[in-house]
Length: 109
Image 1 (tube, rainbow, N blue to C red):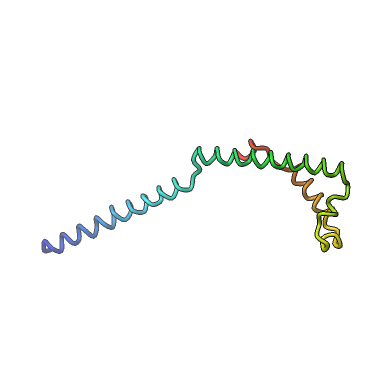
Image 2 (cartoon, one colour; image 1 turned 180 degrees about the vertical axis):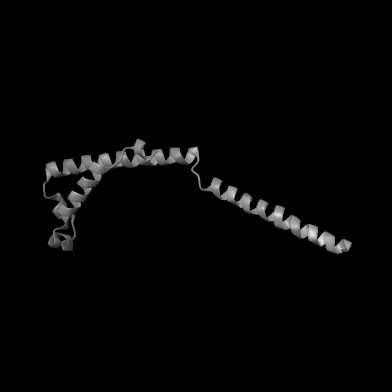
């Protein structure tokens, strides 16, 4: 075996058994670290969940006030096609079901 062939064989084996696995494991590590949430991301999600919950509470308060002042306000706000189909009642039922099944902020962890 000549020196040139031996050198080519060493380079090929080095690339095959050292370089290629290193490259694969390097990118696997990068993908795993990129897919996780940081503590800042978790705090942001908690803050957004709290904000959404407060906005939902405010919306419920506004709906109660509007219903106390005018029980038919929903019918007046719906487009004509929705009034004809009677979808207002199913929307109220869906909203009530969502509110009763809504998880607390601690259930996400």
